[in-house]
Length: 202
Image (cartoon, rainbow, N blue to C red; front, side):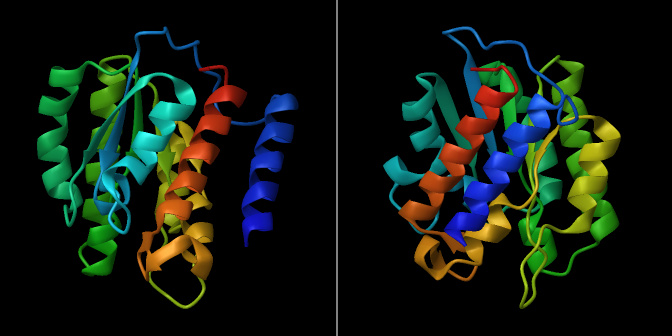
């Protein structure tokens, strides 16, 4: 499974070289703030705070990364919370990983999709680029729920599709069925960091 994650990164690099991948970003200034917004996957459940993916991404990038993850949060609450967080931190980039709790609790997928789309639009309205992480649908064989690709394609944002599903499909990288461990969060951070390099943000 770790090999699969590495191959996904290589594929992203090759697609970027071919000019047929996600939108390129402007280089982030040295004082830029990255906002990591989401639920427990962002908060870092299953590891200590310093091992969450936002904390590791901060170390890798040398930029300030705000961990705005709230464990158990559903997308409707995230949508209500995001405007205030954007206003407080004024980020230059949003890494969004949300909707997993809606899926686990069998809430309306269409409502979740609408909420995530509105989160993306809130950022776009402030000229904040977005990186969206795909979240797996519950099941035996984990893959990113199709709605995330649909959202990313139609909003023209950077999409990391199988990162979270691949990590949660590897027992050595997870603390329980739905959360990575410290090694898994490091893989998340390293993949996001590599993506930022490839699209020109770092």
